[in-house]
Length: 339
Image (cartoon, rainbow, N blue to C red; front, side, top):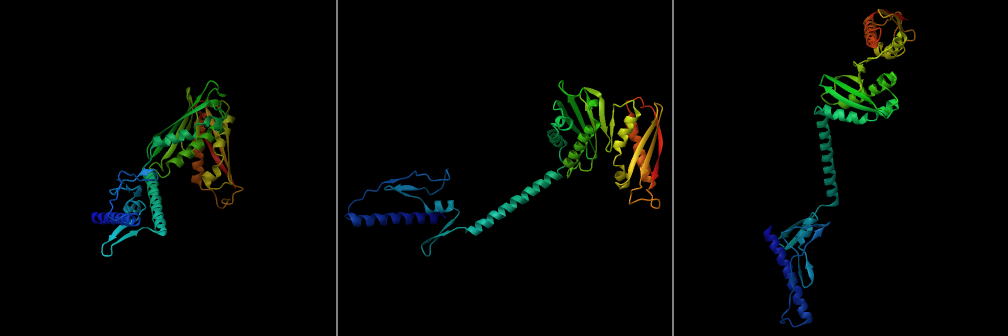
């Protein structure tokens, strides 16, 4: 390579001498002394960046000479010396070759990005990061769900690959429209918590927490006795009412989609009635399958599914009466099916 550079420099010097000789023949005696002014230290900049090269440009008699190799290599071309034929050979990429190289690099970038995304998903995730994301999503939950931007929301996550629990506290400021958690409509509370569960489920998808059971608790930041618990399927309120009909309404709301949830048929309706006092509560579950296209008197609902529903209804009633005058009542009842 050094030999090539020396030969290129020699060619440039010979060309200069030849020019000087021709100039002398044209304008003066060839034997007359000629003055040559030569300067080094010329700098070359490409796109505002200085080009550093072993061969440096120079000025001779007010003409700037830049080494061919410096320019061609800067433009991505190769410079070689053909010693046999005394030729300088310049080779470079065609536009098609450059386009193909760029396309290949873009493809590699895409593959690497996909690999990184896959690693992020399979890395197990971090509950702390998921918690921070959920906190950002529900930062304005007070206004979004309860029409009160004075309510501040704090959300925390805990658990492992098998179970994740969220803990949410609502802080009612002095200017809030609500005095405490018990004043918020239960439908709004459950709409909020349903969305929390949905966002959390999406966040853990593809991580080690993907199959974890999700439970949670929403509480009043200023009154720990006011809270809502979520057991993975239904909500339990710490505050209640001394009116059994209100409890009945809440239980029916919980099982509003029971036809599809328990029997796989949304045409089946479930009605639950409660009666009793502080000592005993009697429930009556009526499963109406008369509009069902799946079940009839010849093809009846499986008894195990009915018992499953009954057990969940009893558990829901127990949760609803917690903290009320009925909390110590014995719960009993039964179900009937209409075909």
